[in-house]
Image (cartoon, rainbow, N blue to C red; front, side):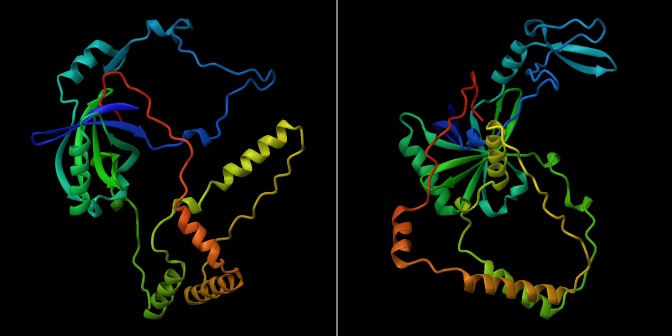
Length: 293
């Protein structure tokens, strides 16, 4: 967890920043020596002498010409940050639907710090009422960050944004024109309606590859032989669009008819419980003298 201040006009709201990511479920690997199975370590070395350089002798340098560097110290970067606004200054409010998700990077939960309850709640309620989001900037760790504050339930989400020059233009992607008939469009609408849901529910999905990877690792730990049969690769071929849509509709209808309907008590129980929440909460790591990412 780290802290910061959201500022707009003459209003300053001290806030706390919490990570929204649950990284403990990720499976990671270490690099080992192929024969000895010992864990390898990365080290920095001088390519001219082969000498291994310890961390306390490594400094930052900017290459302004071939093999020509200007040295920049951590103290200079710290002072440069202090010379720039490190509060999260809101520059404008925009309709949330006008922000393309292509610009979204990582997300963080935002909660009020001590003494900021009323001001924080006012900002959340106003953004919800207006269906707007707040665009802000702040400097930390040698970069000016562009972020978006959007309301979520009774709190805020700080969405890290990419700058415009960090997103490739769609014009670079060749998209040839094609003719679609009304009949094809009607079948496509029917297929979308069959799979349509009132809202996106992420709890319905999980990483099946991660599950299989964990099963494989557990089996290898037990010394068991792992049988991995590859899935057949899909064959790309030109199909009759109308026939493919009709077959898709028929397949979904058959699957829906075969699936058992949930009982009323089960439905009531699920509604009573509400959406599932993670039992673990991971806070963003503290960052020294930063507004928090």
